[in-house]
Length: 118
Image (cartoon, rainbow, N blue to C red):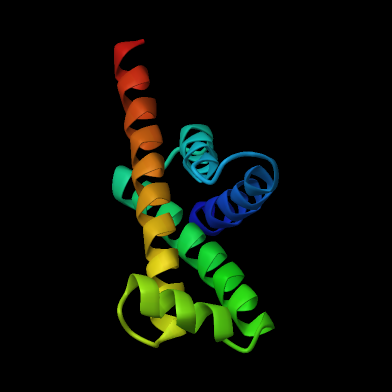
């Protein structure tokens, strides 16, 4: 149950932070949730990873589908040297997921260090 709540909280915070702050604020969202909700480090990494993979994957897919994959296929040709816009969406989601997962892992480990020291 904590896992699902954590995923939803990270998705909401990352979306809200992304509206007003730079893209890397997703890490602050995952870090904050990991510090606030106690979980094991592996679970923390997983909820951060899953939350941002879903959020950025859905957002990138919606933006790509809005223009019939035209922009996505051109960007995929420039960046990935392939005409597959879905691969670009998955790459985008994977980058956000790794950043968020590592931030959540850091928050979980900080919580455990603070608990053992004090």
